[in-house]
Length: 359
Ligand SMILES: NC(=O)c1ccc[n+]([C@@H]2O[C@H](COP(=O)([O-])OP(=O)(O)OC[C@H]3O[C@@H](n4cnc5c(N)ncnc54)[C@H](O)[C@@H]3O)[C@@H](O)[C@H]2O)c1
Ligand SMILES: [Zn+2]
Image (tube, rainbow, N blue to C red; front, side, top):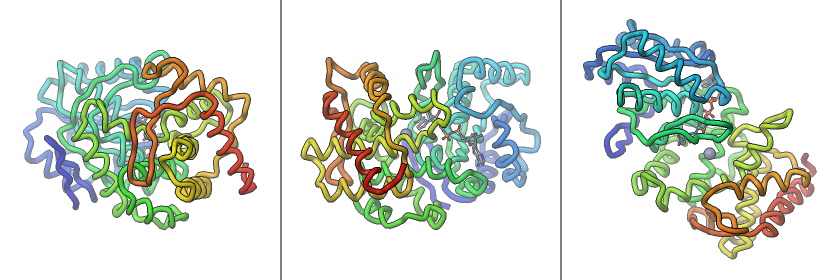
């Protein structure tokens, strides 16, 4: 069992039953609640059956999926806590992906001015990204994560065993954040990853700790996103726009699938700004295309992508704010690109897809 210590809470990495049991045994919580959705109730809760301290825990159920990450669902969670007589001395265990972690954490941090919670992330994305850093919240009126707070859990339990029941697409989606962490902060990790095409052959128990170390280092240095934390946005300015547009279409993309395409475009912008070598750009795009096999971006969507990027309040006039990389393992925040360059980055992605006969 690896233990990473953040400022005021531990992250346990490895089979979680014993660590969770020890945590519950050494903390005198009045009541314990476990928040699940239908998938984590079926696939993940049984993996905690050996935790005797959970025998009397109350199970709180919500429906799975981003569409339920809203205040109505919070209302249901707060209602269930009240009905069960939860006091501030209770503990909420969030057993699920980033949706459960963000929303359950938000509900706990605000219930009766704050009850303790722990994160037990069960998707790769939540294990390497969402479960640490203290950002909690829900979507509101179609705007993602627009209502929320910063608050820390008492502990995080990361058990790669949960990934056994996760679909290949969901695992691959979370892997995009591991690639991103390498590209912005760890050249050695990027050099190791870029030779690995077969995700099924990767050892998550080996890859999760270095990736978490990177996110930990960044959020500890900049908890409220004043500077360094913006490096985590690499691939996300364009990626979020691609993700949002895809959600209106018949075949929506998962977060990491859109971020992979966004990283290719933003690597091109980094190259165009003189920060990234052509060879590195080619290596990054070749690797991400092989792993994610993105579809070409339709030119009819370009205005929608640009509009979504402009709506981001951080942008002034016609320039859009980005995090660029270069050389791999280093990142540059507060970089700007105009519409023509952004369109050229879409064209670069599409050109590369044409070269490889994909899409
Ligand atoms: N707080 C942060 O810093 C941060 C960072 C990145 C992402 N996020 C948030 O995370 C969310 C996305 O998280 P996600 O990708 O984990 O999605 P998710 O929570 O929707 O989980 C994906 C799907 O997998 C199912 N599932 C979860 N674990 C499973 C398991 N072990 N076996 C089988 N099925 C399982 C879930 O029920 C769901 O249907 C977004 O809302 C995003 O905003 C937050
Ligand atoms: Zn992301």
